[in-house]
Image (tube, rainbow, N blue to C red; front, side, top):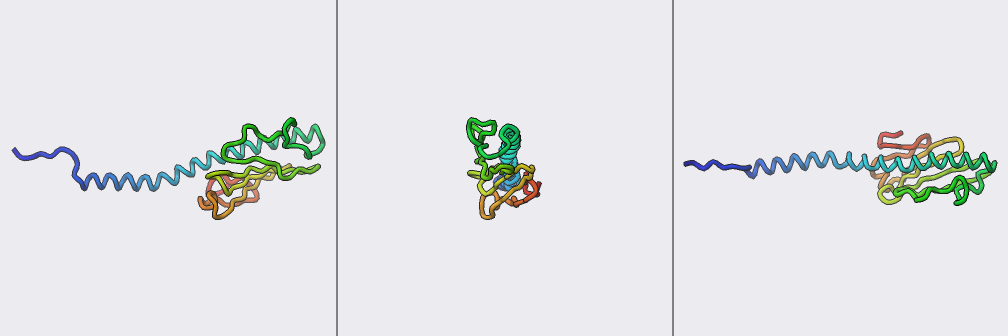
Length: 148
Protein backbone atom coordinates (compact mmCIF):
# COMPACT_ATOMS: atom_id res chain seq x y z
CA UNK A 1 0.00 0.00 0.00
CA UNK A 2 1.56 3.31 -1.08
CA UNK A 3 2.08 6.13 1.44
CA UNK A 4 -0.60 8.77 1.24
CA UNK A 5 0.75 11.72 3.18
CA UNK A 6 -1.71 13.79 5.06
CA UNK A 7 -0.84 17.35 5.95
CA UNK A 8 1.16 20.13 4.38
CA UNK A 9 4.51 20.16 2.68
CA UNK A 10 7.21 22.51 3.86
CA UNK A 11 6.81 24.63 0.71
CA UNK A 12 3.07 25.06 1.27
CA UNK A 13 3.70 26.10 4.86
CA UNK A 14 6.36 28.63 3.84
CA UNK A 15 4.03 30.16 1.25
CA UNK A 16 1.26 30.51 3.85
CA UNK A 17 3.65 32.20 6.29
CA UNK A 18 4.85 34.59 3.56
CA UNK A 19 1.27 35.55 2.64
CA UNK A 20 0.40 36.22 6.30
CA UNK A 21 3.59 38.30 6.66
CA UNK A 22 2.75 40.43 3.62
CA UNK A 23 -0.79 41.01 4.87
CA UNK A 24 0.56 42.04 8.28
CA UNK A 25 3.01 44.48 6.67
CA UNK A 26 0.14 46.21 4.90
CA UNK A 27 -2.39 46.08 7.75
CA UNK A 28 -0.21 47.17 10.70
CA UNK A 29 0.53 50.76 9.52
CA UNK A 30 -3.14 51.27 8.67
CA UNK A 31 -4.16 49.99 12.10
CA UNK A 32 -1.70 52.24 13.98
CA UNK A 33 -2.92 55.25 12.00
CA UNK A 34 -6.50 54.30 12.88
CA UNK A 35 -5.52 54.30 16.57
CA UNK A 36 -3.86 57.73 16.22
CA UNK A 37 -7.00 59.20 14.65
CA UNK A 38 -9.01 57.93 17.62
CA UNK A 39 -6.61 59.58 20.06
CA UNK A 40 -6.85 62.89 18.16
CA UNK A 41 -10.59 62.92 18.90
CA UNK A 42 -9.76 63.13 22.60
CA UNK A 43 -7.93 66.42 22.07
CA UNK A 44 -10.45 68.02 19.74
CA UNK A 45 -13.39 67.11 21.98
CA UNK A 46 -11.63 68.63 25.02
CA UNK A 47 -10.79 71.80 23.08
CA UNK A 48 -14.39 72.26 21.96
CA UNK A 49 -15.57 71.77 25.53
CA UNK A 50 -13.02 74.31 26.77
CA UNK A 51 -14.11 76.79 24.10
CA UNK A 52 -17.70 76.64 25.36
CA UNK A 53 -16.53 77.08 28.97
CA UNK A 54 -14.31 80.02 28.02
CA UNK A 55 -17.24 81.77 26.35
CA UNK A 56 -19.39 81.17 29.44
CA UNK A 57 -16.60 82.59 31.60
CA UNK A 58 -16.40 85.69 29.39
CA UNK A 59 -20.15 86.27 29.63
CA UNK A 60 -19.90 86.25 33.42
CA UNK A 61 -16.62 88.15 33.86
CA UNK A 62 -16.25 90.27 30.69
CA UNK A 63 -12.63 89.08 30.48
CA UNK A 64 -10.73 85.87 29.83
CA UNK A 65 -8.15 86.69 32.52
CA UNK A 66 -8.57 84.22 35.36
CA UNK A 67 -10.13 81.46 33.27
CA UNK A 68 -8.71 77.92 33.15
CA UNK A 69 -8.49 77.82 36.94
CA UNK A 70 -10.27 75.51 39.33
CA UNK A 71 -13.37 76.99 40.93
CA UNK A 72 -14.40 78.85 37.77
CA UNK A 73 -16.87 77.87 35.08
CA UNK A 74 -13.85 77.23 32.80
CA UNK A 75 -11.50 74.91 34.70
CA UNK A 76 -9.00 72.70 32.89
CA UNK A 77 -10.43 69.20 32.32
CA UNK A 78 -10.28 66.73 35.19
CA UNK A 79 -9.33 64.02 35.00
CA UNK A 80 -6.64 65.06 32.54
CA UNK A 81 -6.87 63.52 29.07
CA UNK A 82 -4.76 60.40 28.57
CA UNK A 83 -2.87 61.38 25.41
CA UNK A 84 -2.82 65.20 25.61
CA UNK A 85 -2.04 68.00 28.04
CA UNK A 86 -4.55 70.87 27.97
CA UNK A 87 -3.50 74.40 28.95
CA UNK A 88 -4.36 78.06 28.33
CA UNK A 89 -1.16 79.86 27.27
CA UNK A 90 -2.96 83.09 26.30
CA UNK A 91 -5.62 84.83 28.42
CA UNK A 92 -6.17 88.55 28.00
CA UNK A 93 -9.13 90.86 28.36
CA UNK A 94 -10.54 89.90 24.94
CA UNK A 95 -8.46 86.98 23.68
CA UNK A 96 -7.59 83.44 24.67
CA UNK A 97 -5.90 80.37 23.27
CA UNK A 98 -6.49 76.86 24.52
CA UNK A 99 -3.85 74.31 23.57
CA UNK A 100 -3.74 70.49 23.52
CA UNK A 101 -0.19 69.12 23.40
CA UNK A 102 0.35 65.46 22.53
CA UNK A 103 2.21 63.19 24.95
CA UNK A 104 3.68 59.70 24.59
CA UNK A 105 3.10 58.27 21.12
CA UNK A 106 1.19 61.46 20.23
CA UNK A 107 4.23 63.65 20.95
CA UNK A 108 4.92 66.34 18.39
CA UNK A 109 1.36 67.40 17.63
CA UNK A 110 -0.33 70.48 19.11
CA UNK A 111 -3.92 71.59 18.53
CA UNK A 112 -5.11 75.10 19.40
CA UNK A 113 -8.36 77.05 19.37
CA UNK A 114 -8.97 80.71 20.16
CA UNK A 115 -11.78 83.19 20.75
CA UNK A 116 -12.37 83.56 16.99
CA UNK A 117 -12.82 79.76 16.72
CA UNK A 118 -9.59 79.54 14.71
CA UNK A 119 -8.38 75.97 14.85
CA UNK A 120 -4.75 75.19 14.10
CA UNK A 121 -2.46 72.18 14.14
CA UNK A 122 1.30 72.28 14.62
CA UNK A 123 3.35 69.15 13.94
CA UNK A 124 7.03 69.03 14.84
CA UNK A 125 9.15 67.11 12.35
CA UNK A 126 11.34 64.38 13.78
CA UNK A 127 8.73 63.45 16.40
CA UNK A 128 6.33 60.52 16.55
CA UNK A 129 3.56 62.40 14.73
CA UNK A 130 5.92 64.14 12.30
CA UNK A 131 7.48 60.82 11.35
CA UNK A 132 3.99 59.33 10.93
CA UNK A 133 3.29 61.75 8.07
CA UNK A 134 1.06 64.33 9.77
CA UNK A 135 1.59 67.97 8.74
CA UNK A 136 0.94 71.37 10.28
CA UNK A 137 -2.07 73.41 9.20
CA UNK A 138 -2.87 76.92 10.44
CA UNK A 139 -6.52 76.72 9.33
CA UNK A 140 -7.84 73.46 10.79
CA UNK A 141 -7.28 70.51 13.08
CA UNK A 142 -5.50 67.79 11.13
CA UNK A 143 -7.47 64.58 11.66
CA UNK A 144 -5.50 62.27 9.35
CA UNK A 145 -2.35 62.17 7.23
CA UNK A 146 -4.11 63.55 4.18
CA UNK A 147 -5.09 66.72 6.08
CA UNK A 148 -8.20 68.18 7.62
